[in-house]
Length: 297
Length: 297
Image (cartoon, rainbow over all chains, first blue to last red):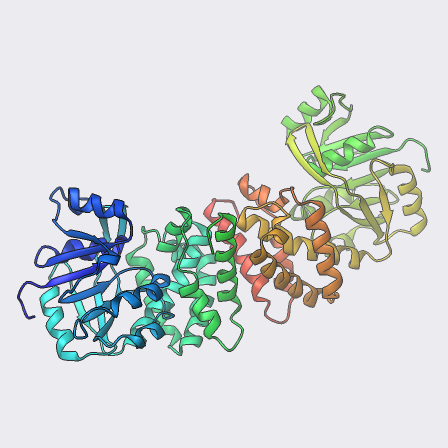
């Protein structure tokens, strides 16, 4: 592997999949696997664009069902799609490393069935899909990765090859803590911004939303056994850094698409042994709004 | 008093004030007291209309500050305005009966200062103000009255004179129970319909809103020491009877006007000795939405 050009398969043509493909295709041989034939064609015909840049990047687009051998596979689909995907991934050579970049924690159990080296990560970039082949990088962030199965050396070598100043990767020790901390942030910012139709910064600008946000943070920390003060500080940092951004849940609801409610608040409600009324309230609120908009649940 | 024509003063030119004035002016000499000179002039120039009826009713409109002696005064302003009004009402002759038709219970303490006979009531009619002098009767209901100070006989005599088949009045025994039961209904239906921007019937049609509604009802019953099953049944009845209606809180928020949040959910939050998370959530949500819309708080 090392510094050499790698064959990288990226699964998922959403905002994160497009963003990762765009940055990695400059140094590597990227294949982007998408669900819809129309998106495949658009990408192959026109290339992949960052919206503030006129030079497209040539990616090879295929349908997910056409998955072939790669040096490394990065899974960027949303959590509910992981179940169906694991079957397909089991056809890869057993030594091919697979990186999972999903919100929530409910999909982790599904990864046990894979004999490949598995790495789990979170994305703190802001990204917005403008069309099937155009993505906007709305907020500079990074990708943090941890070993799930597989080994530290392989992860460090991969990251050395994948990362750049423009698109940094970082290794962290504990995948559970990594996902849990991201889950707290998502469980606070995502549903509140979606229900109240506000950008992320309003969690702190509107003092009444701040009151509710603190209670949501407190409940998530209790369920995930994290320290409230540390996590509330994280939430504030992210809400400030992405203050003009619209959360994925707000956007999905606006676009009449299914949200990650089950993976985020739903996971906490199921996992909790005590009542967590604030989280249950936003969980049912998101379900109510999805039902109101006729989104398939 | 009796069956004879009475001089009735109605204070408040909102939907309920206009509706009560319209029905009582057919048999009585009604003066409608309003806050804005423009509304006074409109009413005096054009008369008062029910929107499905082309015959206006002649009412005498005055400003609230011009309050004169009446045989009976009916107060239809919203709860937050009662404080300022009590001062003015204290100028009335001590035997003039005063009827208060407000939501919530926070204003009751203010009525102690009045030496007049005071009657407290609730309105279950649906009414919508179309303009300064046009009101729509959106749902047939009734006015229930109870003695606060004053006496049963005077109340029965008044009701005999005020009521009609088209606009019935009913006497009930216990003003506290009357207001508490109405408060439960308002504490469930009003904030939920306002936050989720749905008509009243969606409380029952959307199963996720029903889940939240039940918790709000349960908390309100605990605070007000009422039986949950009886009150949830009441909530269902009202939500069904007014299923296509838009609640006053939903409408006020839409019109960028201050809502009755403090009088309804705010009263329960203040009165409760235990934590009531669902009610606190909707209370802060309404404050958040008022802040988002720049409504003066």
